[in-house]
Image 1 (cartoon, rainbow, N blue to C red):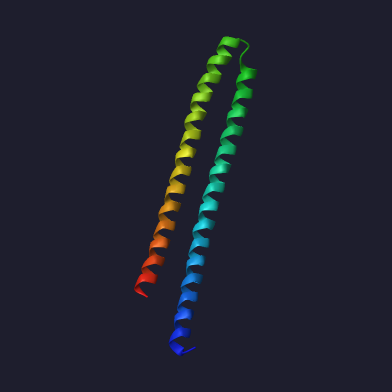
Image 2 (image 1 turned 135 degrees about the vertical axis):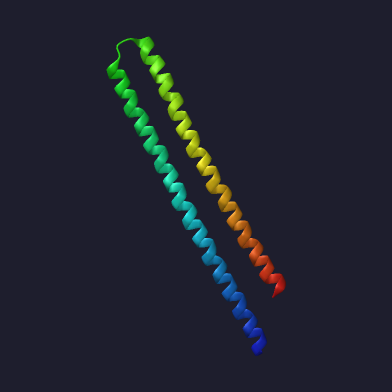
Length: 112
């Protein structure tokens, strides 16, 4: 093998390693953000359950309880939809980052 070929293989290996590192960083960040979203869902559900138990203890009238539960469900549905929207943004950003990484790789290959 001549020096030029060896140099090319070294450049390919470095580029591949850097791409793997960048992809790993993207994955780690996305996993961290998704874990935060899961925790938010869990906390929201626990909070709603706790409030529902409180409602059941506060009222003896079934009609009032149903009305309060409906209001509670509406409130927490809104909170959960916010979490779903955040999760969608996280996944969209991940898609953009991976697309940029692939485009960068393609540009490197076509220019090199």
